[in-house]
Amino acid sequence: MTQPKKQLVVFDFDWSLADQDTDRWIFEVLAPDIRRKMKTLKEEIQWTDLIAQSLREAHARSITKEQITHALEIMPFHPAMTRAVTSLKARGGTTFLCLSNSNSTFISTILKHKKLEDLFDEIITNPAEWDPSGLLNLKRRVDPDGPQHSCHVGCSPNMCKGEELDAFLSRKGISFDHIAYVGDGSNDFCPILRLRSQDTIFCRTYRGLQKRIEKEGASAGLKCNVKYWGGAWELEEYFAAL
Ligand SMILES: [Mg+2]
Ligand SMILES: [Zn+2]
Image (cartoon, rainbow, N blue to C red; front, top):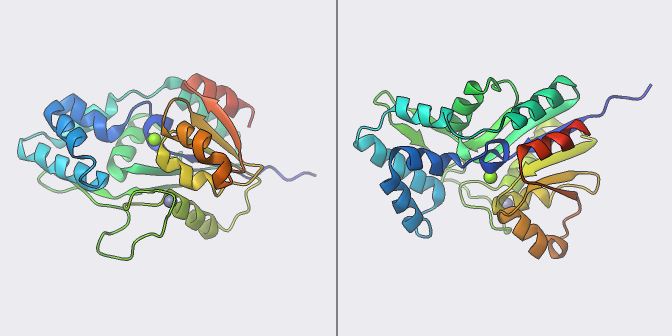
């Protein structure tokens, strides 16, 4: 008897599982002037620190936990994505991992609202917690005062997704027959360099990851299969064949 396939699906969150970017969206909904400031300051301040600062600014002007939660709940999320992951999970044999530069609260709020809170085995992201006053306290995954990651592929100081993927795989101790990675951003390039020739990157088109694959893929030794998708309905088609 053949053993069932052991598969791992790794999801980036913003513009991959979700159809928008959490960090930018909540300020576009609730405080567009802070959103503008983020755009101005993003070259000077590390992104996670900039979001933490923007959340403090929003809190100081009385933007509430309920408003932020509501903004996250109305953020675009394609129904085909919900169908795609729900049916793949129901078929069994697939482990789901979320690897995101957003934060634990934004992600869990949206997953709960979509009834997908049981989808992921693990969610690896920046930690964020509401304090009693309604401020969302966001921190980098990699503490700026502790040892830093050693990535040379261009990951932001808050987290190297490649090192996190390697650490997850050794923690699990399972040898997966197939790893599928769904991503869109330039920071998804580092982890996909760790994938093998039997693995697949499902890359969203016209964003940072596609550019890096085209420009640096061959020279960096990218080995996995590359499949492109634009709308979640196309990823749903790919998932049906996994
Ligand atoms: Mg993304
Ligand atoms: Zn990295």
